[in-house]
Image (cartoon, rainbow, N blue to C red; front, side):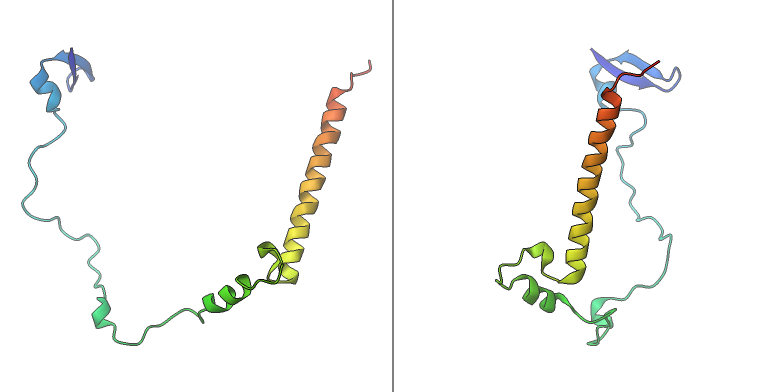
Length: 115
């Protein structure tokens, strides 16, 4: 059995195969003209901008590639020195502290209440 949405009762109703495959809410025709532009701000085409390209800062990618691709037996998460070591050790301390806190909470929860 085929079903279609009834606009009158706002429910699904039984239907023949042809109305079920062409629902009321969908239009089969495509508009011939394009819609109007809402935000009509002019845009620059790449060829209009000229040869000068402005960046927000210096390109650091080659320097970072040189640091991270060096084979000096240092793990990649510690390659940038003191800030990385500080972040790594802080993360490890918080992880171990959280695990200990969970174990203490489980131990306290496992103890029977004394009345």
